[in-house]
Amino acid sequence: RCQMDKLIGFEGATPGKNIELDPTVSAVASQFREDFPTGDWSDMDDEYDVGLTARWGITPNVTLSGAVNPDFSQVEADAFQLDVNRRHALSYEEKRPFFLESSGAFNRFYSRSIASPVWATKVTGKQGDNTFGALVARDELTNLIISGSEWSSYAPLDMESTATALRYSRDIGDMSDIRLEYNGREEY
Image 1 (cartoon, helix red, strand yellow):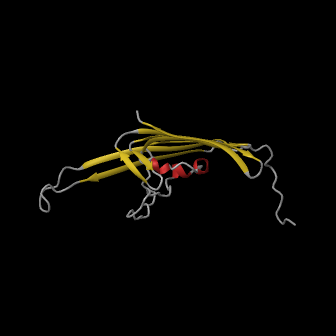
Image 2 (cartoon, rainbow, N blue to C red):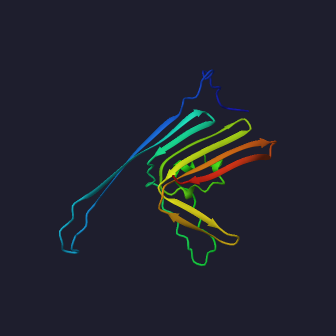
Image 3 (cartoon, one colour):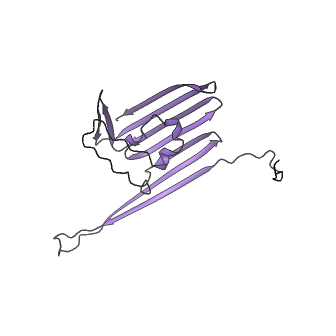
């Protein structure tokens, strides 16, 4: 038997649009001694970075997210992994909030291959038996994973590229589904 009072007055209530804006500003100032250790200090070198991450709950089951010059400085550092006598590329757990939200739609996509995003956008959702996700990100660095039959490695390239991940799945019964997936990367 339930011991809680009955709540009333919520009939016809609709959820809000759930809009979240997270602006960021980063500043770095540096100086060095021209003739170390006793020389004069160099002029101050200032660097400023402004970014924005946004999230919009279009419906309770569909979310649109975007980021321009995202700041991931609050993310904890990766745990050290030894790469001696390894026959495959190291894999690191995703810890960046933008890529973690709704990550279930992209569970077969290695988002850490997007190393330094300039901008990124994604839409994810579930409507009935259909689950979908689309992620597009412009990256300052291009990390390629080169795989072989018994080894893999990665090659970082100093060029911009656009990464795309598309996902669609349809539930079939209680325990099965059918999936369509696309991963791509293009350099412009």
